[in-house]
Image (cartoon, rainbow, N blue to C red):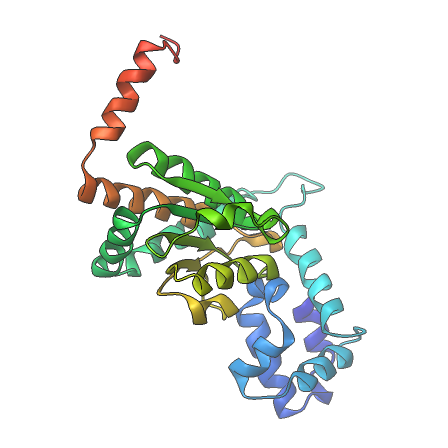
Length: 270
């Protein structure tokens, strides 16, 4: 465990080392996704200091420290070797997910209204998400398509196929999801759209993705989870809120038409 390694080396740690140690322990769930440079920027130290700290703990470098923390976090959910009393071993997951949802309350209504208005007024809404963010993007694209037309998904294939770019116009909107660890393809695609005059609505975490510099509006939410894996709970919930906001601007005619059509086609059971 990282805390045990730090404790065993405590007598040989410098003031900078202790600053780094305290930060890592306080933000242990973020460590698998934080680059050494991000930690250095937060603390006002050099990235080399972070690397040397990891080496003092017995790791080959900071990436190996991250691997160790990932293992520690995943071990939390390992089946116990014997029955245990008290809370179930999944309690930590539910607590973290509840906090992720609670943090959504910190998003001001006027900011969410602005985002919903951007989506409602756009010509075509393009929705992008890479790797862990792909499912969140797909969920939003599905719900938005039920309440407005002109919703299209985007993936990394656009970097090798110019065809979809022929349909991009300045009246469009790109909604991009990106969470640590930020994918280069999402940033590259976002910049391609921005260069064509398309505003970018970025949904991300509290870090510093490069695409934030090109975004017209940034919505920051939490994607933290035990075990070193990202949570999509808050992202999907935000997508629902934005979709309902769009209904507030456009009305529910398309949604109701879809319900009527589904009944005519006898799509659902019962």
